[in-house]
Amino acid sequence: MFIGVPREIKNHEYRVGLTPGGVKELVLDGHQVLVECGAGAAIGLTDADYAAAGAQMTANPQDIYANAELIIKVKEPLPHECAQLKAGQVIFTYLHLAPDLAQTQALIASGCTAIAYETVTDQKGGLPLLAPMSEVAGRMAIQAGAHCLEKAQGGRGILLGGVPGVLPARVLVLGGGVVGVNAARMAMGFGAQVTLVDTSLTRLKELDMLYGPSLKTLYSTVDNIERELVHTDLVIGAVLIVGAAAPKLITRAQLALLPKGAVLVDVAIDQGGCFETSRLTTHQEPTYEVDGIVHYCVANMPGAVASTATFALINATLPFIKALANLGWKAAMRENAHLAQGLSVHLGQVICPAVAESHGLAHTPLASVLASD
Ligand SMILES: NC(=O)C1=CN([C@@H]2O[C@H](COP(=O)(O)OP(=O)(O)OC[C@H]3O[C@@H](n4cnc5c(N)ncnc54)[C@H](O)[C@@H]3O)[C@@H](O)[C@H]2O)C=CC1
Ligand SMILES: CC(=O)C(=O)O
Ligand SMILES: [Mg+2]
Image (cartoon, rainbow, N blue to C red):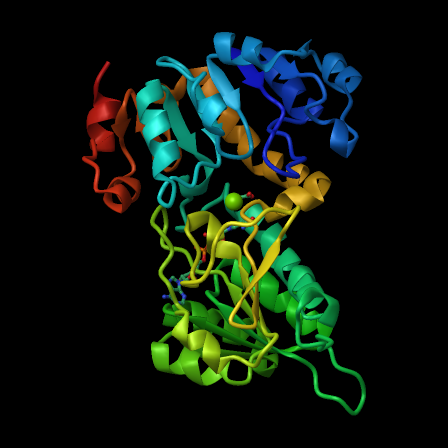
């Protein structure tokens, strides 16, 4: 198969969809891999490394969009990338379509087959291709939040861990999945007082067994969250309903409950965000203020630690990329029902039910697509 890897072009996005090690595996399987020059340069993966692994290199991303049967990326295709996609071509990347009607329409119009990393599942009900980036973003959320709590960033001027004789900051984590648990672990490591809420009692029980009294757990209700906000310095938004737009857990009116200079880090922003006042920001300008509350809403947080994040991502994606390349997407999905959950858009039809529902669009059942020739 002809596989293409364009350079990522989103703001401060330095990750790359395939490492030279990944290229080597695919070339050994008999595939042809075309990589855009400089795709891995920011994290020390040189064009020479890719060439040595067996890739062909091009300075022109249009060569990739014109010729590749399978395109491997990290972030969602931007409008001019969507415009180059076509029927018969597969793109495998993060898409986050539920909050993004324009991208959904562009992928429909392209006729391509778009497979989303973030909805591929595993036997345990997890999201194996989202998890590595959720680990990174969850851990980063505490670094980012601690920085935002500094006065110069608009924050309350509170040190996360406090010092002897002065209490540490209070951190509220909304959602106890992969992002939430990684954020909670980092915050506890800093010495902060951490409370985590979730709607899953099973999950809260697991976390209680894991962390004991150093982590306070609370069932997620409006009332419980409101009572916490009154004394919270840093809130981490880490909820997810797979494929769907994030539920809004803090309204604009509820911002008034927080102390002035408190910080909201909305990791769930890629699914539309879980605070009413969230709007997308970039690494270049990561924060803004609403009613005296600092908001950090960067949708590609792991892009900032692109070296760690790229290797973590490829560890998870490579087996699926190999299956798509070796078998073709349809046979690979017939063989692996978990990979099939990634199919979002195909030949102008929306396949992911949660995406269709978010935009009020018709949805074509996965089974009927996989049953057809
Ligand atoms: N901004 C960024 O750079 C990144 C964003 N993310 C995003 O972070 C979000 C969380 O991802 P994961 O932790 O991997 O998901 P996950 O599925 O592991 O965890 C989500 C948790 O939210 C809980 N939840 C759902 N509704 C809730 C509610 N109303 N109240 C409290 N808890 C609720 C679920 O029970 C689950 O435990 C996703 O939107 C993901 O796309 C992930 C990586 C990077
Ligand atoms: C998950 C995601 O959107 C990211 O890593 O940027
Ligand atoms: Mg994202």
